[in-house]
Length: 261
Image 1 (tube, rainbow, N blue to C red):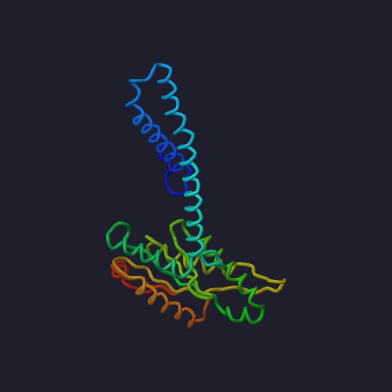
Image 2: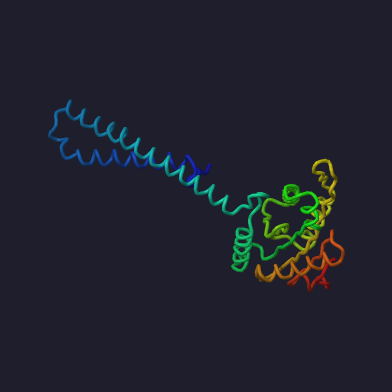
């Protein structure tokens, strides 16, 4: 059984308290050991009892209080980092955190620490300005929350989603092959199309356009984003509510046709 010794865990508090207190007791016995030979048996027992109880009470209290406060600080720092990385409206990663996580994965892929494959999808809400103008910004916010929830419901545990613009989301699918990526993108499009959105009892169909790129081999986030964004523009130009997708790298050559529509 592995003990959690992370800064936010109680295991770390207990471990440091026990070790710190034991060191204090050992130090007390070491210092007093030079006087033990000259003490009577009764005085020796009192000295040993004092060397045990005094560090136990004072040292134990000090270390437990110190580590408890450090744990609270670690939890506060963790919560602050989560808030700083999260879009406050949709509860997905913000643009900075999303790009940082994708770039970190691609860096690991270059060192062969993880699978050097995956996909990037850019999802844009169709006619979102019309929703804001017709129903108001509060209803627009509700629509964005609903879209974000629908996206997250279609993803695997390792997938990453972030809000990168007003009505624009990005999704990174680490390790996914082109066919899996296409199915995820098409699944998101269909689910959002099926969502019931009727603020104030007024039906307002939602739809999204998706541009995507699957990669196999070395690439950069900037290159993937440019390709996915180009396909997003293509999906919107072709009538919206559709997926435009491209495969790059060795898999595209094996497939014979690098672009899927």
